[in-house]
Length: 253
Image 1 (cartoon, one colour):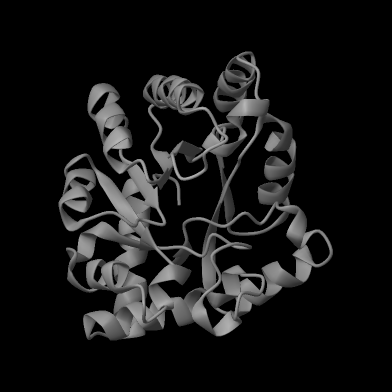
Image 2 (cartoon, one colour; image 1 turned 90 degrees about the vertical axis):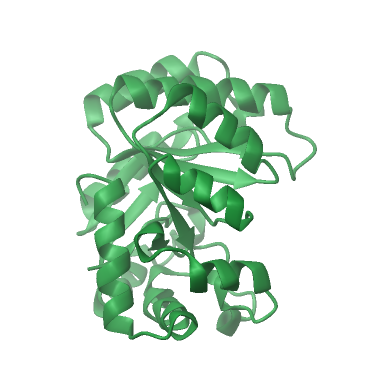
């Protein structure tokens, strides 16, 4: 099963042609799309999106880049939403120490509280991890959520192995398609087969052939082809492998 494990189909970039984007994804063979939420203010939009479009499922969470605009009370709203709406995961959550104008202490507070929610509702988590791999791993070891996906993974092999030990799969998408992304491509080539899932992060992280244009879930088959080439296998094998991995770590796909 071809699964896009990370696609912001509810984003404003798709407002003009969301129906067409979804039709194109289905035509390309994408059977499931995980739509991660980013703020409490977009919970309803994410819900509406997954209810309207076949094959789409929701993850709900507060993204680390939005915590400066989020009052503490948003966590209570999120908790209520998780209990009522039954998503497949908590996400997109995590830490981003690349962006310097977002307080790392506040990021960590929201991350920890959302890991507690994931534990409470026995849900996996979809992680945003940028320049913060060890800090994220530290909290995962403390709270031990039910695995999940480290989205757009860009750490070392040693760090990758630590995520795998904790029950996480690692997401690979557009960044892998660039010949200069040597570390990511080597990880995609050499990691255990059961550790890898596919994603687009549409409308972001476009693959090389889009020349910086808007990404979409219909690009996933070509991303699968890149992974197949790196691993010396077929598109069909990559789709079967990554689909099984996604369904193992995200129950309900």
